[in-house]
Length: 313
Image (tube, rainbow, N blue to C red; front, side, top):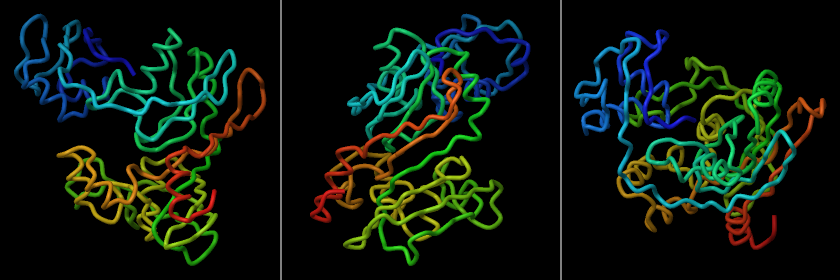
């Protein structure tokens, strides 16, 4: 994702509200966050200070962003490379590492760290939530990225989730549609209900249950935002450590205000959302065949489960 320093408005983006243009073209900040940056005096427009975020763009105008002065929070950068060839790089992402620039994160992201280490532009082929660990695949050139994106609808993914509760059935499906939760008051929170606009389907397979905890394999057949987390919440088995879709929504509000604290971790039972991207199967355009890349369960999840159950997983 490109980071805004200076850009020139093209004809395609002319006559649009500046806050809307910025949030769509430079999505690491939301529309409301860009509005705040404008009011903070961080945006220049044609050399002058921009003071109104509802101003309309014009072809040829130049926008300059002075950058953010907030210190980026610390992250866990202990990723490991699990596959690499001339075209692709796949890593096992730890649980406290944003994939791409967003919000207060820019340098402390997986994409930025890898691009610095490899000294080249890397193209993300998919996303994971910040607290979700597991497989992330990046292309080393635009041609490979484009070829894989053309067939990405056929990609097969599996996840591992540790949830509260014990499902009645060893295998169950959730095909409840998903949409934004207007009643929540939390921006971007989603919910599953009958009249939601986005079709969604996830299959769940029970691996093991003990002490009112269950380890599940999740197979998403659609790719909606937060799909597995939302479907598990709807089914009555929220993921351990999930601040947004857990058992208590006030935890997320506290986390936004204070950041991670011992009290929040105590309430959640685990320091992050216990969700892991286990595998991705896709067509490799250079090898001209399907390949499957798997990521071992991260040590933090493995250690937590072992401590809870007293056995290895």
